[in-house]
Image (cartoon, rainbow, N blue to C red; front, side, top):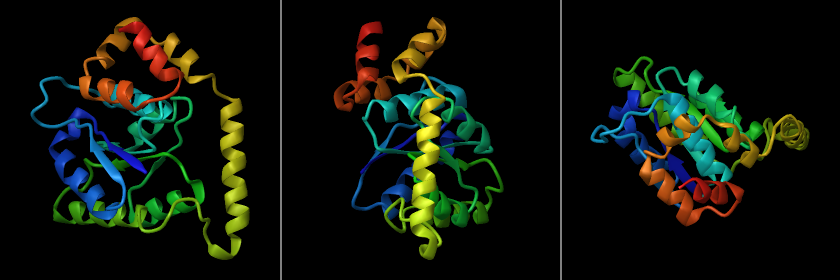
Length: 207
């Protein structure tokens, strides 16, 4: 699995520790750090980062994204506005585990601005550890796994029916907003090099 780590600029101070934590608990996966880092000259809001997260996922450049903002809630909601993104919110290890096993989505948002004393970092570590503790999508509780897996598949199918295609969505975005997204050159370049869907064609068409 190819995992992207990407955060809003407001939480850039936590980028490195989150990246290292994901690498620690997903040692067999490729983990790519897209920032936002403290030394980046550009600033990106959680809304802009959510669209870049969607572009990474819908293009196929990454398979899963670990993201977050101050509360985690805004990033989760914004990511879920992008077609094909199924983002959960994980303020605790239990939430992370249940999302991975029951909902089997492709992104998780963490509340990186809450309670960040020593206990906050410890909670993040345990949350990421639980997220990657088992292969995704196995269902929980185990005695009801088949029903949980079927329910998750049905929810994703219903959600696809309620959404436009990624290309149609991207074409509907305000031009000035799109140009702000293109400032995140590491994401743009990675999508162009590793993506394989219509989202890549869209990106090439506007550059």
